Image 1: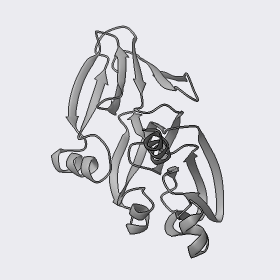
Image 2 (image 1 turned 90 degrees about the horizontal axis):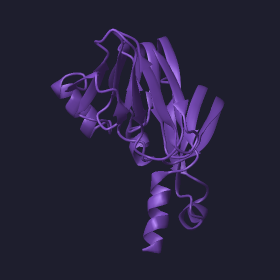
Image 3 (image 1 turned 120 degrees about the horizontal axis):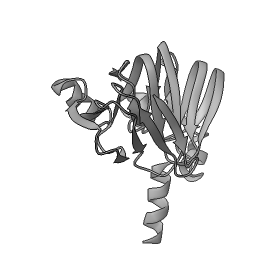
Length: 219
C-alpha cells in the first residue's frame, strides 16, 4: 500500500493507493472520496460492546469502515479528519501508542484498537476518562486541530489542557493549577496537565475549546 499525506499542515489529507487484496480501516466519517470499485464494509469497532465503549468513553465512532480492493488493479482512496489541521502516520512493530479521543483517523488491519482507563486527571484535563491505545504491527494515521508538535520528555513537562494528542502508554498524567491560586484563576490558564515519565509526546498547536471560546465571544 502506498499512502501519502498531502495538503499539510493546515488541510492535511491521506491519499492511499490500495493494491489488489489490500485493506485499510478508517473512522466512519473519514472518507472524502474513493474509487467506485472499492468494497466498503462497516463493522462494529471491535465488536458491539467494545464499539459502544469506544464511542461513549473514548470519543471514537461506533463503527469502523473497512475498505478493501477486491479487483485486479490498484484503487485510490482519500481520507480526512474532521477538523482542519495536520495529520501524521506512525509504524508500529509490536509497540503501543495512546491517542486522545478523536485523534484516530485510520490504520492497517494489523493494528488493534483498545480502550484503557486514563484516570480522573485525564478527565479533568479535558483528555477524557479513557484513552485509545493502539497496538500491533502496521501503520496508524492520526491528526488534530492545528499543527502537530513533538517533545521528548525526560522527567516532567507541562501541557495546557486540550493540547495533548499522542503519547507513550508509560507516561503518567496529573492535573494541577497553572500557577498560584490567584494567578491560575485570573491569569487565564486555570488547570494544566503535568506529564511525567520518559518518552515522546505529540501536541496540537491549537485547541477546539479555544476556538469555541473565541467564536462565542464574537456572537
